[in-house]
Image 1 (cartoon, rainbow, N blue to C red):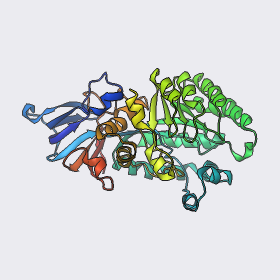
Image 2: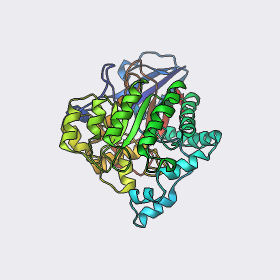
Image 3: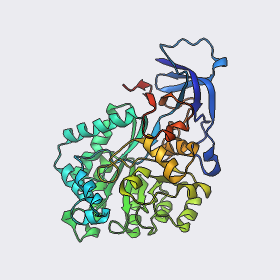
Image 4: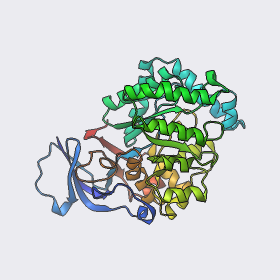
Length: 412
């Protein structure tokens, strides 16, 4: 099917095929065409140009985009969207003064979610997760990474990853899956972190690999969770199964996790709310993508990733939601982009680059997603009539996305 978008006020994020990520000062540039047209054929971006160059194209459907912007769909490279139930009581606990760590110490946090998930049937887990996925698709997310990590038993972790794979099979959105068995130490291994880590490596990891359930491997490298030594051990084991790392680091403390990630050629290091000069230096000599999760900082009232500092150091930056029941119960990438501008002082151009092409890179998808490029996946969104693309983060409380097309399919 041919779908033609015409009279586009501005067609954003036009890139050549060899542009895989945007770094440093280049992130302030957002290539575009004004008064443009865009042709999608089946699931592929076929062609585009200015209206004065539009030839007679026979398309099954034409959308008049007068006064509207068109840009690639958001690429959300860090989510935990497969989970059971919710944790709104912990939200109230934090309002009443308990910290994230204090909630975890009294049985809340990740262990709370793990207990609920272990008790939830796979079919019910799929239904809950599918509702969330449909919601984020309608808000413009066209590619998404989904982690395990709320199972913490072999069967529950496999269940999460099977659900994530099934979501990718049943919806047009592109899904990448990450094995995060090392998210926390479960109650049955309390006081025996090394035993649990060995259990992950000898029991969980081989079964994840055998069923081909994960693209990446992850670990929560943080005080009170898993050490840098643990991180080296797990990532080396993951490498033997062909799993590239995408790791949680520097959320509350800088303990050397960024360097560990880079040593193991991590595709991304995510969170980075606490960052040192040494962390920045090691990233400058790597292909690893720093990923910020500003809605997590917003929800937990913790510092924001110093994105301005990273970009000014010549580094790239990606933005993602961290959608999960405890620290970010939202998958709204529009809010993430706005928050990055408002709280992290990114320009609209930087934030859009971070949430599209750099987000695609952080999932290994920059060859197919994240930009308006001939031959890439036909995943784009049409805004409502707005004065400029800066209006998207400026008008942060409202939905300014009118039409979402993912893999050539219009999302109703």
